[in-house]
Amino acid sequence: MFDYPVNLTPDDNDTVLVTFPDVPEAITFGRDEDEALLYAVDALETAMSFYVNARRPLPVPSPAEGRPTVSPSPLECAKMGVYKAMTEQGIKKSELARRLGWHMPQVDRLFDLRHASRLDQIEAAARALGRHIEVRVF
Image (cartoon, rainbow, N blue to C red):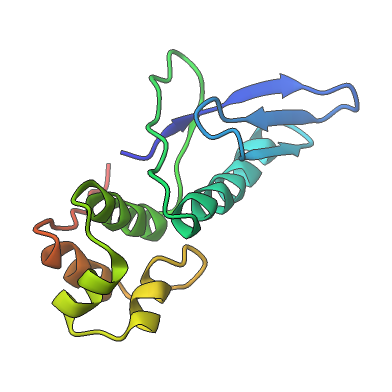
């Protein structure tokens, strides 16, 4: 769902530049492709937090078309899925807090991609929006 294609470009200083066509705010580099892709996860999560904090819709990933892809961690994907459902339904954080019986700081932490929220809290928020969390191992 949140699997974003990346462009890997050899840089002139023997590093590999990573850019995201769908998330222009996410840019990083590494000494080689493996390190660059590892750092790309953090760059993507940081950029996504900009969207959430600004209450903007999350970018939609374009088809990979043979390019490598990067996804946020599973916990961040769950949070982003709840955020996406909330914005698609036009629900404000205050309404979600009311539905959950939570205080606003709890909802704020739920959407803080750097905060280690508990999965049961993310599941409760998804249920309040008529959705559910699904975890799969491939």
